[in-house]
Each structure stands twice: as C-alpha cells, then as structure tokens.
Figure 1 (tube, one colour):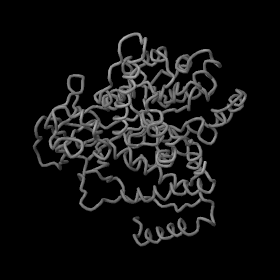
Figure 2: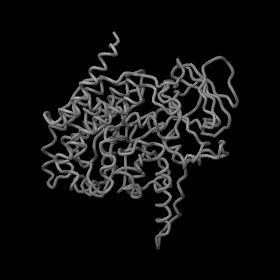
Figure 3: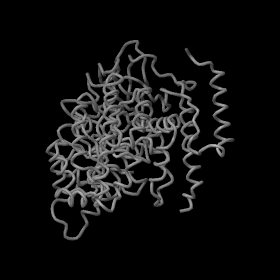
Figure 4: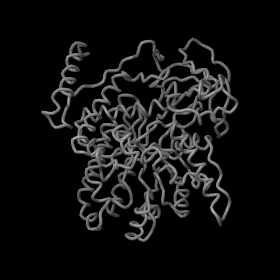
Length: 515
C-alpha cells in the first residue's frame, strides 16, 4: 500500500526537527529516521514509459567487425535488456524516442575501482594533506538509513557522469550491503564486495610495526570473509544478473596465505573474480617481498588469484614483471587519476607505462571524485604530462612512451573493462549486447562548436559529467536530459547532504579541522 503523502510530510518534519534541534541531546552519528526515498519524476522530464524505444544520436561509437568505430547520425533500438537494432540514419516506427541530437552515444562506462560511499564524506576535506581515515571511520558508524542516503548520493553521481557498471570495493560489508540496496532499487550494474579487512579493522593491520599484528588478525579476518561470502551468496545474480559480487581483499600486505586463499576460494565459488589494491605503494611491495620473497602480483599468481576476472588498482610501485603477470592472465589494471583526492596522486600512477606495455588498462574512480568523465580526462592529461617528463629524463633507455589519448581512455572504460569481466555483452554498442548506454553533449557551449565534429571522442577532453544527458543500464533509463529519474533527484541530494553534515559535525566536535 502506498504511503499517505501527509504521513511522509509529517515524518520529514520530525526528521528535520531532530537533525536541527536535538542533535546535541543525541550521539552526533546516531540520528536515524528510517525514511526511504520515493521515486519521483521532475516536472517536464519524460523518459520512455517502457523499455522499448529508439535513441536518435548525432554520432555513436558502435562495434563493427570486432572493433569500435565512430559513425554519424545513428539510431539504436532498445527492447528489454538488449540492443536489438542499429542503423545509420533513422530507424522508422512509432516507438518512443530519445533525442540525442548533438550528442555522442557511447557504451555505458565501467569503473574498475570504486569505493562509492566514501566520495562525498571526504571530498573537499583532504586535498591539502589531511588523511581520509577519520571521515571514513565516522561513515562506518552511521546508522543504516543515513549510510544509505550517502550511498545513494554517490551512486547518483556515478550514474550522472555516465558510469553504468561499478567494480565496487565497498570499505566494509556494511557499506557493501548499503551499495547493493541502492543498486537494486535503481537498476545499477554492480560487481560489489566488502573490503577485507574492513574499515573498522584495517588501519592497525595495514600500518603495523610488527607482523605479529597480522598473524593475530587471522581469526577475525576469516570470520569477516565468511560474513562477506554469506551476503554475496544471497545477492549473486540479483535483479536479472545486474548484481554479481566479487571478492575484494584490501591488499596483499594485509593478508596471510591462509586468508588470501580463503578469498580466492570464495571468488571461484561466486564466479566473478577478484578485485584488490595491487602494488599501491612502495610499502606494500617491500612488505610482501620481505614476507613472501616476491612481488604482490607474483605472490597472488602463485596462490591462484588470477584464475578468473581480476582487477588491480593503482599499481604505483609495479614493475615490468608485474605487468607481465597481468598480461598472462588478461587481468585489468585500474588506474585512478583522482585517487587520494584531486591532484594528490594522479601523476604518480603509471598509466602511460601500462598503456605502452599493452596491458588491459581501465580508469577507476577510486573515491573522492565520482565524475567518471572528468576522471577519463584526468587520466589522459596527467598521463601525457607524466609521459613527457619520463621521456625527457637524461639517459632514458628504450622507446619513448606514447601520449595517452581519449580513445585509449574510452576504450579502457568500455570494451577493455568488459573483456576483463569476461562480459562480451557489455562495453559495446552492438546488436545482442546489453543496453548499457551513455549520451554526452559534444556540440554545445564549452565542449563543442555548435555541431558534432568529425572526431567527437576528442571533444570529451573538454567535457565532464555535467555534459552527460542520458544514461541507461540494461534498458532502464536512469538519467534523462541530465536529470536522475530513477528517484527524486532533489530528495537524493537533500538526504545525502543531511547525512554527511553529521560527519562534519562530529569532526568539528573532535577538533579535526584545526589539525
């Protein structure tokens, strides 16, 4: 039975009074109103009423003869989950239509590394050198409904920027459960897992000064793995296959052979592979070399971690031998140009080296910025700067590193990542592929020239998520004409704001901003 709108209004008023007037009488992170966002459609925003429609685009990146190709003036017919027809020119008929004139139609982007809920709680706080640790610890302490509000806000941002598939390492089982609740409600394609060890246990293990801490952590880590596996079994294949859990160990240096083997066994059972931070810093590489006599990638290979889809994030301290391990197993390197906050680590990750080495390279969100299109730009721009600096080094041996292009980034965000997931039905605009699509304005002010140009992929270097107009996953329209339409756009923003303000209030109470 639908809720009486007057009841919703009364509950909103109660929640508002609690949040504004009684916070001082309660734990700052304990306000919980238990409200669920109600889908609503903004005035004037009218997406198709069914999953049977035609998209008319000025240009599209279609899959032809085993490769992507940009074509002009193209129509794509969607029916149910799938793309059923593609034609240069206009498909006739009386089906509802989505107007994508002036836009480039792309396969939905795939982020190979996200921590979705951690974006808005840390953004704007860490860019001048503060650690993200305390904000994400407070995120973990939020009651379920407020955590869901923050998850929804951040997933909405991912969708708004054209990212339809999330290889999601939630920072705990609790956050993975929150992510899945939102993803199921909005028809999001997710490969989620709770990071192990999760936020509540991670930092003493990761930043230990004695390996006895790691040894003592094994029983609790095994229990955490078991809890994550139990949840993954419950949701594996949910929502017509949109939810496909992966196992997500934090990194090689926070696991023992026993716990990592347990993660690998669980990944084989679930069938969707592994996702981890890999060689993310010199400290991890030195620790694993000291403990196991080899690099993180070589150790994981010895344990069998690459016998299925594998996504490794950051790889700041990777070597040529690590690249070889990933190439042998068709594993994906997820480069995260805004990892650590905007500008904090984008120049230190080896994106141009990985592209030059012929790896399967994807761009991942990591966290802090959920603007996927902006991250594609950062990968290219910072990658070119890094390549030029490395090429100019005195005494450099070997061939010059090529300049990464937007074509490299887009391919990595679409069919390259899809291949890494073992999903030839994703990352392509092709008859029979899943209808995961994103339309980007490449002709308007600041991004184009008033019309779609002859090489519209290059216009994406001047675009951002704000230029994304329509987003579709498995035929479900989620963003239409720049508005979230799977939920009440304004309410998602409002609730996300109220939830994150509780984290800020606690940080202020602790004197965190004065540090």
